[in-house]
Image (cartoon, rainbow, N blue to C red; front, side, top):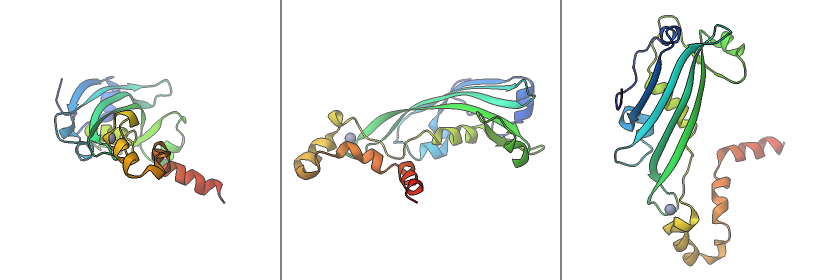
Length: 179
Ligand SMILES: [Zn+2]
């Protein structure tokens, strides 16, 4: 059960019918898109997924994904550990039409007839949504903060604002509100 990849060719509707569950600790090497953004070294992603059929007869995948990942601090370029958490709340649907009719609190996973799903990719998709675009140490722990301040005292009063200005969603929000 531990350190094994999830099924790569899963019949997710069958898993839901028999209320399967997966509790696993995956090595990030099984999740190449996550592996690409973390630093070298053994790192794990904890998975707790339950398949079920809800009271509307919709087949669902629910659970949690947790990981502590080592990435590069974008201020000092030293490793920084980030905790990433994702709540999974997926409904297995046949097509876009059915997806539109879903309750708002779940996301569609569109799976055609006889289509098999790579559960590692599902986990990656969910987890990637929760990984920040850029990561930093706390200013007090970051070697870059001290260097930054001593090299450029004029901007020492605003390093903490950096994370917000580089957030693509705040840019999007300001575009929307600025019309
Ligand atoms: Zn740093």
